[in-house]
Image (cartoon, rainbow, N blue to C red; front, side, top):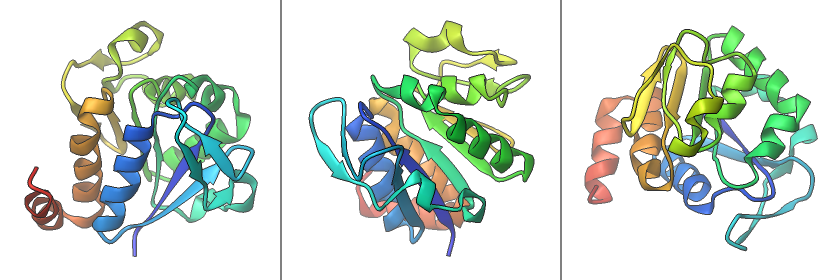
Length: 179
C-alpha cells in the first residue's frame, strides 16, 4: 500500500488538508497526519483536527509522498527545519513532494522548485523561485506537484491518487464522488 505523510500545523487550510486526506484514503492510500507540535491542531477557520502522530514520531523516509496543505499558518512549515530536511530527503530519493496554496513556498525555500514548472496561491507567487509559473489548477513537474488553493483541492488530491495509484483508480474515484 502506498503511504503519504501530511504534516499539520496551526493555521492549516482545512478544506485543503481534509480533502487531501479523505480523497487519498478513498484511493486506498495510507495517509498519516503528523503535527509539528501538539496532537490537536487548530486550522485557519477554528476547526480542530487530531493528528495521528507528532512529527518527531514518524520516519518520513518510509513514505511514498509528502503532501503539504497551505493556509494562514504556512509560515510555520517554512520555519520548521525538520520539514525542509524531510522534503529535501524525499526529493533526492525521487519520491513525490506536493504542496497546495501557500505551501509551494515551503518547497521553494527548500530549493525544490528551481527550474521547475509550478503554481500556487496567487498572493505568494512572488515568493517562489521557479523555472516557470503557471496559472492552472494543478502542475506536475517530475516528482513535484503544486496546486493553487482551496478551490483546486479536489483536482490536486485526485492528481495525487492518479500518480500514486494509477489513472483508472483516480477516474473511478472521481466518478464515484461525482467530480
